[in-house]
Image 1 (cartoon, rainbow, N blue to C red):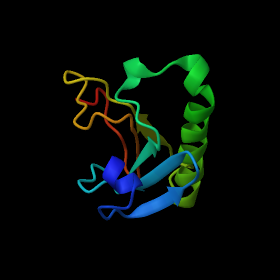
Image 2: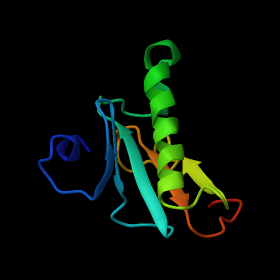
Image 3: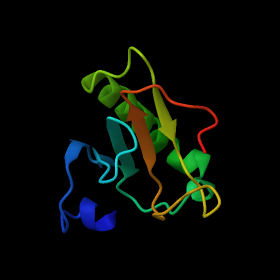
Image 4: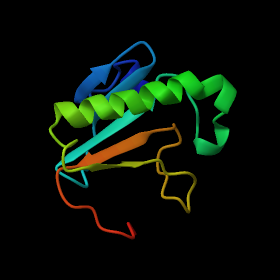
Length: 110
């Protein structure tokens, strides 16, 4: 993800601020599948420090809500996913939030 942040490799970027970047997932699991990432490197959820990262995490949730509205999925609902570690399904070790929507989500997820 650092290469996407630095614009060294292409991505379909749908939002960017000083602290957060959001782009479409290259292997979407729903009609809307966007990854929301911090521009600083935090490897995984267990590396988050609430006091240090509170504003950043709040901005990520604000971006998720904005994009859900922009992509027309806020009315029927959407899913936010944060995977942590190998057993949690994390494939890229840079904290990222999945915004998924545009279809009915099943439970349990998998």
